[in-house]
Structures are given as structure tokens and as C-alpha cells.
Image 1 (tube, rainbow, N blue to C red):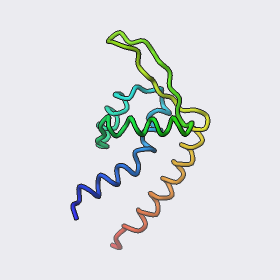
Image 2 (cartoon, rainbow, N blue to C red):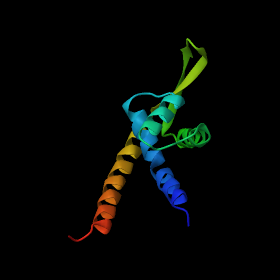
Image 3 (cartoon, rainbow, N blue to C red):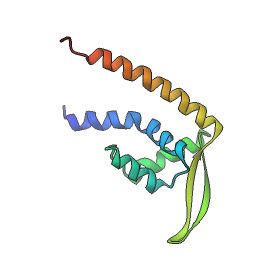
Length: 110
């Protein structure tokens, strides 16, 4: 079993939480989201992000607006819907519980 596969699966598992959290702070353009995820060592490519954004939009958790760009065609900027904000709140609670459980499970007795 390769450790890189397990690491990738762990990152994918928290990707939705991270993307929603980034967008919750300010509306975001996909390349800005990718940049922030890469800075956080959650390496993501467009082929991963765009289907996730579409799925979240179809679930009414995100909405987008088109904005003119000085550097080319108009761009889609994503923001959370009210439903998305509530969903993110629940994801954060679940993350806190999971993080605590994993910390307790992996703690070594000294």
C-alpha cells in the first residue's frame, strides 16, 4: 500500500470543508481558491476543483456571479448561500468532533 494514496484520500476528505471555508471569508474566483489550497499544502488541480464547485452549486450551497475582468473574459466568483453557511457550520462541528476523536485515538501514553 502506498502512503501517497492514503494522503491523497485524506486531503480529498477535507477538501469540501476547506473550499467552503475559503469562500465563506470572501467571494472567490476558482484560481484564487486553488492558490489558497496549494499554500495550505492541499494540492488541488482545476480538474478536481471545478466538479466540486459544480456539485456544491447544484446542492444550493454556493452561488456565483459573473464579474468583468481587465485581463480577459468575465469571471465566475463564488459565494456561500444561506444554506451553504448553515452546512459549513455543521461541517465545522463535525470536523471538531472528528479532530478530537483522532487526537484521542492517536495520542501516545508518555
